[in-house]
Image 1 (tube, rainbow, N blue to C red):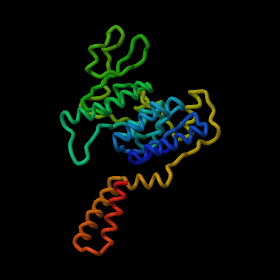
Image 2: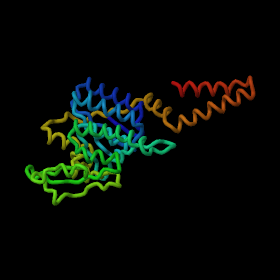
Image 3: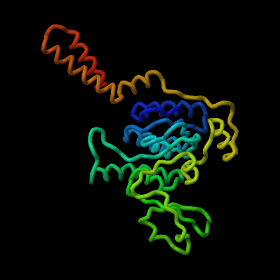
Length: 281
């Protein structure tokens, strides 16, 4: 299931339609091909909730990052049960921004707190390191990697929690700084695998299938079906894009002005009406 370009409500409805179509056809694994720099936070959160609270209870969800999963794209990716990344791709950088303004003080923390919560939910549901995901959202989060002496495995902790760690259980003397407190986390495929965010780095879709088949002991029947958005879904998404919406607003205002300035012309008023109907619809 392709998940490309801007994350918006149109993509949300398209993902739901295609996912349900795949489920009805008997699919047990859904691979979401991620290529996006982000989009609307609410739309991404709605997709994330759908993946975790509904879809993930019935099928295995896999995010396949083929170029970048940035911002809202990272939120969607970590909401899948597995992340597999193509070589030399990136994931992260999910600090919220406000178009045409700045988020500061309480407003920034209010927004970041919500986004961190969505990443906490994904970490809990899918077994990703929570501290690392939170560092994708907030610059003030400093993360260390510490070895668990008993299990011989590495775990990740925010610096503010290091004092709570039992020194008899963790090798605090050799803790490793992974994320500085003035940096926003963005990872390459290799780093994502090393830090437990991506399950594997592959060289193509066949590599994704081979990894899943070997790990889960399953056999895939032939080539996977590729479900693209319909032309109508693409049209709706295009009409609702910020650039097109700005043009429609401008044309509506210009048409209304011309019609009021020169009554009886008709065409400018019709253009304005069409633009308003499109915007409202």
